[in-house]
Image 1: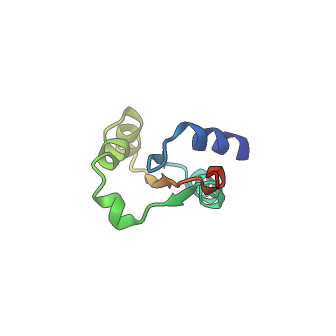
Image 2 (image 1 turned 90 degrees about the vertical axis):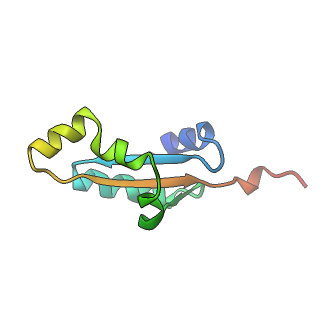
Length: 91
């Protein structure tokens, strides 16, 4: 929801990241759509995600990731960068 994303934007520092990982494709699309529409988040490109040392842990090294792997399921993941909030800048 917009309210939850506003709280994420408040809690995540500028330049910080929000990661989404799921095995449910429709949920993934919904989360990516909501984050992509928020003015304080920008999706990180696949090339940059491949260089992110956190991604393999989130994608492959959790109990849920192990379960999905055993069941032969798919994993969907994305990361978003917290942008600077220029509207809070004072003249």
